[in-house]
Image (cartoon, rainbow, N blue to C red; front, side):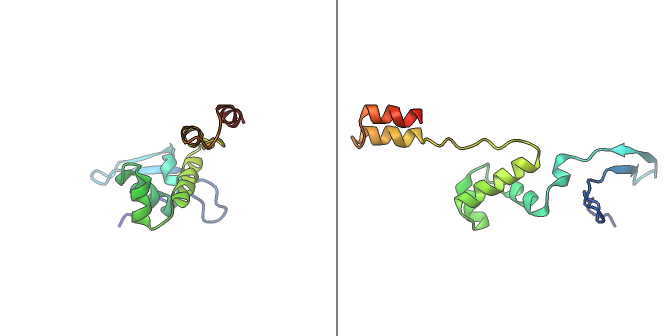
Length: 120
């Protein structure tokens, strides 16, 4: 019976590496230090989220429906996975340019106010 590879030491929680590979057909054994994929270090919950996200082709609305969670929760989980994979999460711009243009089109703000808001 094959077990799922564990990625963290059960004693100290440090990252584990694979040191032995064995062929299931001819029993050849190769010993060395083998690196695991970044994905092996993700939690079961993070892997499930990635699977749902990919299955839904990145459509956040569909991910919301399938997992029964809100848009901000989907974004937070996505940011968590991005960080866990070793990447920086791009910060949302504090200024919503589309909203400012819409407000300008509706006459809710003046062009000068729009320029000031965009420069903040």
